[in-house]
Length: 457
Ligand SMILES: Nc1ncnc2c1ncn2[C@@H]1O[C@H](COP(=O)(O)OP(=O)(O)OP(=O)(O)O)[C@@H](O)[C@H]1O
Ligand SMILES: [Mg+2]
Image (cartoon, rainbow, N blue to C red):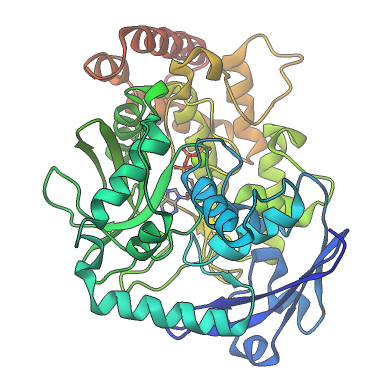
């Protein structure tokens, strides 16, 4: 990208939209400078390690690379490069209409995608090309709230359905991207592999009715759309959410929904307060990458280093004291449910530096049911010197600073929480038999390995 790019960051943290500061992107560096008023307001910064209580009036800088081309916190505001990503396709269509030609691949287009979809997404920061666009956008959001029927009316729902069917099910249907924009106003980017939308739903009823995100008296949800090549995935994900919930983890309200050939999982957003205000949310990936400029992808760190990273974070952040233990418990649950996809974007922190805690559980889908995702852990670990996997996962307890007794307690609880898991997987009719059998066999083996190291309590 030849020229420096400029954008602005705003937030609604206080209830009223206000500007946080200015964002600049050059070929080798991203930089952000807070407005003085924002610094003195004492509110959370744009990311944990870029907080104004650390940087003050100094410009926050990050050396960009091809892999991380903006501040790490902003990656989740750019639609994923997955060919089926709804937002990416939708914004590229809009961009194409604006440019009158196919948008070129590369950093320039990624930046445009950030400006188009980087507001109203997960967390508390909203990115715009300039202040006037920000003001206009907040005004149009407020008017959506005055007219909550908008999303349902006049065939626009069918436009949304056409879009979903074309993009997710590959059906050959045309739709008008401008109309989708009017319905969902526009649909903000959400990270992750599978197609999803941020919408509001009424919690009752089997057939989904969607409204624009943030409409009052409705539940704001992340709506995941099941890809046809992963039939039954959302049933498995819902089961794993239930199992976590039953054993005391914090789990958002969720509901499986079906409409003709489309299958959904609606999960209530926990990055919004009961009053609908945004709550800061940042993935561990983003926190670690912001602090360590050599860290560019999940594989750049070993699982056994994670506890130490959180200890270091707690030197600057007021991190809930049981964070390490809770994370270890999540890792054990992932092992025993066949979720090899617990990567560093699937764990997030909620709140600012002053009150930082693990977010509720999300995305616990047991992806090991599908042969090409049959990986024990997306975060690598070093197996050298251990007798087997059971021994490694027991040892992780101490890497999270837990005593042997605490580690044993966590293992006990995880085994108890998942004791009927295989039966419950087997009862899910929509999941193909092959996937059920593979998953059941995987979790049987993982249990056996871990049980070898359980001491009686
Ligand atoms: N209930 C929720 N509240 C707030 N944010 C959420 C919620 N669920 C998911 N998210 C955010 O949306 C992102 C994508 O969701 P999720 O991880 O469920 O999708 P995915 O496509 O299955 O991801 P992956 O690529 O890891 O398979 C998450 O990384 C998180 O930032
Ligand atoms: Mg995910």
